[in-house]
Image (cartoon, rainbow, N blue to C red; front, side, top):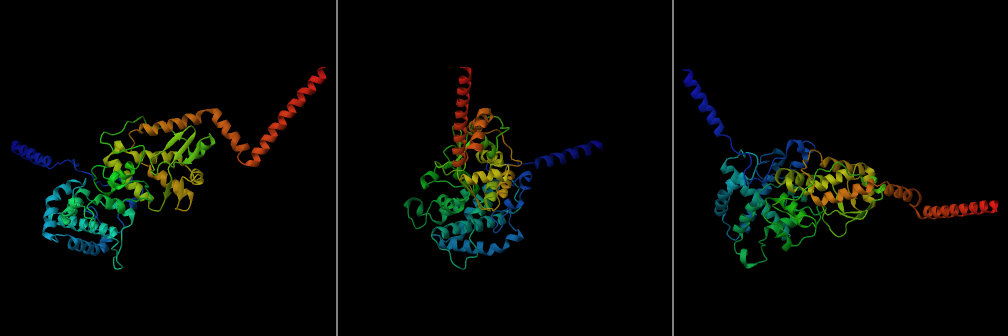
Length: 425
């Protein structure tokens, strides 16, 4: 009897173990933001207006947009050359397993329900892009998504391209401009928040960014492609040990470091150091800046931590900005434009972004800049010279007065020497 019970228990455990499946598949590119990152600003990762994909489907706060999504879906199908709903459904059904495998979470929706969600959401986004491109916005449209909402769009861009190609097959090779076949370019123009992650890129350059997972990935790759320092790479980047110290902006200034706007690049990541001059690209801080950066950082942490270029930039700013005085200095130098109001709000935002981010070592290009700054600040002579300039030469009148004082001191010394010599003789 005991033997039978033991065998039965073994079979139950074996069946239980068979249920275990890998959490992440090779196609996985859409993740739940880890709790340790999410808890500092839950709202930054939660859609405000529209639900896209299965993760937020059915959220009561987002139900108001469902009718608009269905309207856009119908308009997109009517706009297509085939106007074939059956063809769209067949295409989505074939791709449903691949889309499901893109999510780190186990999707609770049935295959049938998931197909409906994918179809409506994809057609909604495509119709939105086309209305934007052709300026077909009408007064009865309920809402147009704000640029920062692109970080909440979690569908696979490859799926969208296939749906788009199905809708307009004649444009694939004909070059017909009436319906642009480059979905990537349309998504880039509408989805990427240029005010938060500025850059300069053309259609040809964008086409070389490689495979795009979704709109968050598109924004990140746009950021890297527009940079002079970094490019997306499958092989990772050379790294050095963790940085343990970097002086704040006011401390660097006191040590003699000069701050300038890097006018040679519009990409946030392109830091430069020349002698004792640190050049930092201009950045404008909006209300939605934190939302965009947090989602990009979360994607780096989950998907490409060994190419976490944006995280390195945020760590740099976290070191550079400690107080509102540091922010005021960067504002004065034209590096930061503050739309948040108080300088302390900017400092709090950048300091909060770096909390609980995992860093496996800084890339070599940034490490060289940081080491150069630290080495410059550690030389006592540089700090003394900077102190003299700050105390005695920070205004034209003080400079003139300091020169006059030095000149008077020299004359006094000379006069004293002559008096001593005359006394000796």
